[in-house]
Image (cartoon, helix red, strand yellow):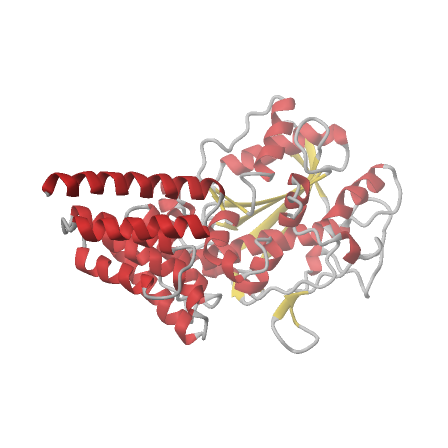
Length: 459
């Protein structure tokens, strides 16, 4: 199979559909309402899950509507602010549900202790639109979406009073320094950043342009929750891919209709710069929806371990995959007892869902390994023997070698350990190739040789 290129992978993660499915630029399905008339929820054509109705706008001439010119420390720049009430529904989630998120879930699933105190009420939610996927001076960041909860003027410590999406727009290249300077200050004023694939893309594109212009990037000092990585860890096994569009649909109930493909966004901006009719409305609206999805996906992630939303309702999403992802995350930080609980839940859920035993195999091996590491020797021996009582597969050699370790070091049963090691060597020869073959074969041979010497000395 041909390897996926870096450009293709970035395009996939940036929600761009395959070229064959891209509609003609400028096609319309009715009135092209702007962001300030954001339509919010609508039922799908089949009456099913809610979707965000965006539509592909017609080409228009002149500046995009709704822009305001603002003066900043580095000069004037253009922005489009859009305000939402806290109870605004994006898909199936209210924006204020993010305020009930448990930051400990961010630290656990992202593997970053800096996120343990992240307050979603005090962060900014970042999404950008650029002229390309590569870095350097040839790629422009022409739209910056920054969302934030608005604190109450009289009591900043109280619950926010609303949510605003600030969309900075590069109306002319001469305004770039002013726009990026304002962006840097806005990000720096928050307690952290939330993005989707932003650690690998959005952050670096902004940093490239900021450094070219002599602007100090704001990211190093701030904790950054990149939702792509923890959500992929929890749900990749149960979703078709790890794209934002997939995650917002599966976890947030968002169904977009007729979004302008991301690959057309640079063309729309270049048309505007050249004074031609443009489709920039089809860039503003998906960018805004991306920012709102960051809020609701962060809210979902922050409920992972309790599996309940703030109102007590079920979290939803693929529960079997989530149990496996949480178990692995807990093992990564040494929380083995809790990991075993989630492995048990995974097994129960998998059986209730009617999944075949093979779907549980990897987690059952992980359970046996965890019991061994916790020095629960009897339980670990029983777990490995249960695994080896089924048909031989790619896990058999591993289980035999772990069984041999327990018999040699915990039970001092050298004959049993040698028998398990010889069986492992036989399985390796039959089932494994490449580097895995070399590693397992070397381990099995070394164990066999050592056990034979030990048994010889005791005779």
